[in-house]
Every structure is written in C-alpha cells, then in structure tokens.
Length: 235
Length: 224
Image 1: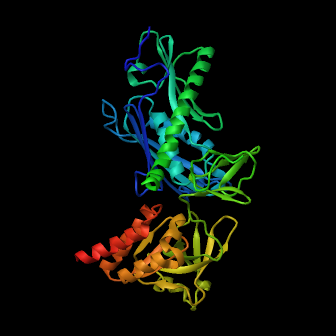
Image 2 (image 1 turned 90 degrees about the vertical axis):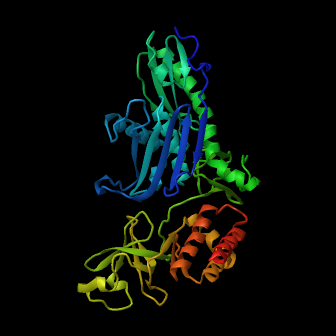
Image 3 (image 1 turned 180 degrees about the vertical axis):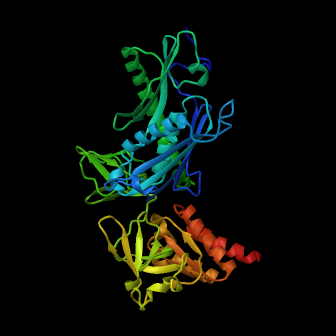
C-alpha cells in the first residue's frame, strides 16, 4: 500500500523544475534541465557535414545523439563510457527528436546532440529529452514543437506522476515506470516505454496524467528559452 | 485571427494565427499557422513570419565570403566557408595561370581567402571563384566567427558599428557574408577587435550595444 509519497508530494505533482538555455558558449545551442535531484545538460552542434559519410541521407538530415552519465551522478560510481543502457537511451532520444525537428529542411547534414546527466534520481531519459529539445530550439533548428517528457507510473495501487528512485524501487505491490515524451501543441506521443506490469485501463490513466504533467513542463521549457531575452528588454 | 504581436519572441510549435497566412519561418496545419523557429515575430502585409534568432549559413550564388583552405587536391582546393556542405575552389577560377604540380605554393592549408560563391550544385555543394579584382588571398590567420543572423548588428546602420571597431583598433577587417570576420593588424589590436566582435555575438539583442562597444574599446585602450 502506498498512500503517501516519500517526499510528501501529491500524486499528480511534479518535483521542482529549473531550466535554462545558452549555458555552453562553444555549442550552437545548449540547455540545462533539472527536475528534483535529476539534472541533465545538453549541447547541440551543427548542422554540419555528415561523418561517417555513409550515414548521409540525400533528402533529409540525421540526428546523432549521445547520452552519457557522469561517473559521479549515481551513488555507486557509473563506469564512464558508452554502455548498453546509454545506447538504448540515445536511441529513444534520437527517435523522439526525429519527430520534433523538421529534418527534411536540412538535407545531407548532421546534428550532433550530446546529453550528459550530472545527477541522477530516476527519470533521466525524460530530463535528457527535455534538455535536448530546448538545446535544439536554442540552436535555431526548424522544429514542429518542443518535446516535454515526464515519467508517470503506478506504485502499489496508486497512479503517480514523476517518480523518484526511491519510488521506482518500491517493493510492496510493485512499481511500474512509464516514461512519456509528448508534443503538447500537436497532442502527439513521441516516447513511450514501460517497465513493470500494468493493466490496459491503468496504462490509459497513466498516459493521461503524464500528458498533464508534460504540458506543465512545456511552459517551463518555453520560459527557459524566452527568459534570456525578456529580462534585457525590461531593464 | 492573429494571436501574436510584432516583435514577440516565440518558441517552435507556438500557434500564431488561424487564417493560414503564414510567411517565412512558419508551417501550416489546416488553416493553423505554427512557428517553426525560436525567433522574433515579423508581421507583414502578406502574413505573419518568424525570424530565427540563430541560423546556419547556407551558400547562395553571388555571396562574398571569407574561407579557409582545408585541403589541397589535384586541381582544386577545398575551402571551409562555414557551411555544412563541401566547397571547392578550382584552379581555373583563379586570376593567374597556375602550375598544377605546385598548388600549395599559391594557397596552402590554413590560408584565408576572400572568394565569391558562383555555383551551387543540386547536392548543395558549392564552387567558389577568385576571378576579379575584389578577391584575393588574405594575410594573417586571425578570424572571428559570428552568427549570420547577428551580422546586421555587427555592421550597424550604414556600417557605423564596424567602422568604429576598425578606426578605434587600427585593424583591417573584412566581414564575409558567411559570418566569418577576417582581422589583421598588430597582435594587441587584433585581440581587441576580436573582443569587440565577441561582445556583439553575446549581446546582440541589447539596444545600448553601441555604447558598450565604445566603452570596451576606450577602457582597454586607456589602461595600457
């Protein structure tokens, strides 16, 4: 039974969120996204010529995404380098960004997206996707929409939004984790994974609560991009 | 109905209008117009457009650009002109007749050139030419990079901004349409000009940029 959350949040409440753009001077676009104790830093380079050359597509551009966890991001040291988990998450971020970025306008070119997780407390792939999409917009790429991503799930009997690591490891009754990537103004899901057991009805409820949470994150993402320019004009 | 005002800042995916009157930088879904870029709204008689805040240089025929030689081939040089595509300078497009055995005697890897884009191929690669009296190899190897959307800010109204930087630092400067700025002069002056260009790159949205540039150039000069 899970009646009150470990950090005293409501069941449909997000952790505190902080986002900013333009933090890396040498990248074309960059962003930092923090949700609770999870923090991701993303940098976008390009469009540039495709390397290796045989990846080139004549009618559209490609996104090369690399996700990595810093060694100090988790309690046990994360081994530096590209492992199987990093590979999977890079793939799902690439697939989500492929829907968001209008690649048909960038033929024969490559966009390099680097995402680093400096602190991990569950939901790193969602935080990384948010950071990557802010960075892509900051880099001036043509996009259909920003991607807002959040994890939702079922812990014991209750449906929760934005799980922490503590909740993911909840044993009594089992925990289900569903990361959701969402294009709010298009009402389109670009990332959906499921870890655990859940019934069809519950999954629908989880997706609904995830969409509501993602729409809140979307507003914060928009502010993260605009803030730099609004402050200057006011002062 | 148009949902935004002129000069508003919008993010990708924001709904701009319901009338299907989108201009550049927007896309259409039914009659709804959405923004495609993170940029500034421009409302024009023909519709609502978005000008992106940052962009990538896309070569156009007739552009005059500063480039750097990156490779010496059999009968051509490969030039980096800050575009995502391959660019070549053929020996036939030089003013002088050149012995193809010793191409690197004329232009070597790392040399800077001022060239004109004269041909774009369907695969987006470009050919550049040095024919004409305006184009030449540039001495020195100092360049500054600036986003092409910020170029009008660097040049200023009728060249006021760039002329101030030029006269205050005693540097020769050449602004290519691809966003590469060539700087030549004494080492100290070059560093100062570079700092000024970087300030424009960083604070291009500041309305008091001209004063800041003047302050930067005056203060550094006064201290030494």
